[in-house]
Structure formats: structure tokens, C-alpha cells
Image (cartoon, rainbow, N blue to C red):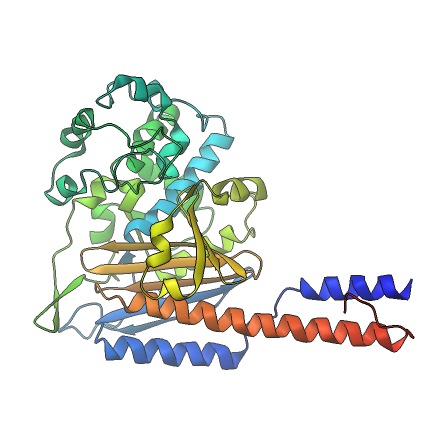
Length: 398
């Protein structure tokens, strides 16, 4: 009996949720963040750390625009670029659960004019394939036309010149244009526009104070960061481009560190009235393997496996699973990640195209996971010692 008790205690200890990150760990990351941002002379940056159902730290650094004295704070709005895809995945999960469409519906049911070169592929393209980046089409198809400021109605007919490289659902190919086909599907099945659906189903119920969708939403926000690009070793401000905003599910959301902190709290399961556990699990189920991610600078030192889910990436970060997405659009970088097991999340936003974002993210997660694993071992050892104190035999599980 005592041997079994030790086994249970030790097993329980190994799954003990790590306590809130210590003030020392938070201070160390804050210093590291500030030092790295200053070294790279990034004009402005913000971060937020979430633990369980709280934003435990949120800070801004620098200025909204080079030459301005207006500071970046935790409520400063940035373009979050492809981190927008996490909102598309969440909204689609909500609407699918309400019966507006099914994940295995053919895309042609809603967009009968959309076609590949070989029409036999058309009925094989399902709604789920759009958000899981498993359409089979060559990566970033026609993003060059987005950047050339083409309207969606001029880009979509171009797919009649292409065929998938594999049967939809069988291989990975990152998309912005095809990913955004979820927008007309949502509009047709609900008779509402995408921005209204996001606002009613996510922004408002999660009390995200400054989140918006689209170019005008960004311009209407007074406390907003201006994009910067580097030339001749210096950062220069740029005018915000409208092009990717036309593909709102892929890259159309604007948000602050605080907004994204509340979004992470929902991902951790603390707003089941918005996203319940079944929806969250379905969103993060691994769909297709993303081998290229294993070669990403900074990340390749830590991740051993990578997949795409629904608007999220799922990384094996050492012994831990990390749900993640990054974003990059002219003048902005963004990263969002959380550990479901550890109930911990991180937001990073920059108003410059700096690769320091990856160094900041990987430093945070490697530091936190190392500390948590040490805590696990200490708890395990304490549980074993407690059980052995009342036993004449040492349990094998300890």
C-alpha cells in the first residue's frame, strides 16, 4: 500500500502545475528584453506575460515612431500580421460549432467559381484545409500579387493556372490568399462581415480594449505604432500598406500586448463561454508536419518537431509542447505562444522588421521551461521523501 502511495505521490508531483514565474525570472526577462531591443535599436516594442487567467506583466519600450516622443506602452496597437490567423482559427471554430458550416464542407459549396487547373481537385478542397495550411498548393502562392496591391477578385482566378502538389489535406504549403477564403465562407454562412463577426464573438466578449480589424481600424486608433524598415543601418518609418489588410483572416488584425494577453487567457481555457475545451483541442490538433520550421534560426536549437494545426503552429520544444504563431508584415514583427500544460503565455510586438523577436521568444521559453522542469524534479523528490519516511522500502517509481 505504501509503495503504491509513493508511486501516486511521485506521479502526481511530476504533473504539478508550476507556480507563477518568480519575480527574479520576470525581472531577468525584462532586462534581457530591454537590452536586446536597445542593442538592435528597435524603435518600439511591447510584451505581455500571461499565467493562468491573469496578465502578470505587460510593458512597452521605446517610441511609436522614430523622431517622436510618444512612448510605446502595453496598450499601443501594432499590426500583428500572420498572428491574425489564430483569430481566424478561433472564430471558425466558434461558427462551426454553431452549425454555420462544417469543417469537411467542400470550399466549392460556398465559392463555386473557385477552381484549380485540374477541376477534379476542386471537390477535394475542404474548409479545414484552408486553415490548416494543407491545401497542397505551393507555399505563398500569389503573395507577390498581394504585395503588388492587387485586389482579391483579380488574384483568385489565377489559381486556375495551378494544381496542388498533393491531394488537399496531405501536405503543407503556407498560404495567405487561400487561407483567407474562410472570410467569404463565413460571410455567406452567417450574412455578416468578418470584422463584425470577430468583434461580436471574440473582441467584445473577451474585453479586448483596443483590438480591431483592417486598415481603417488601425488608422482610427490614436495610440498606434508606426512601422519601420532598416536602410543603411538605421530604422526609418514607413506608411502602412493596405495590401495585406485585404486578406483579413491571414493578416488583418490590429492589437496591443494587452489585447493579445486576453486572447492567450482564452487559449488557456479560462473563457469557456467564448472558446470551450473541445474547440480549443480541435484547433490545436496537429494536421500537417512543417519540417521547414525545424531549420528556423534560433528556434532550431530548441524544437524537435513541428506541425500546423488550425491557425496555430504546434512545436515540440524539448520536453514541452508549445502552441505558437509569428507574424511579419512591412515594418512589424509579432509572436504569440503558450504552453497549455504550464498555463503560461507570451506576447511580443515590434514596430520594426527585426529578427530579435525570435531571440526574445526562445530565450523566454528555454529559461521558463528549464526553471519549471527543475521545480518538477524538486516536487518529485519531495513527494518521494515524504512517502519513504513512512515506509521501510523505497518505491521503485521514486
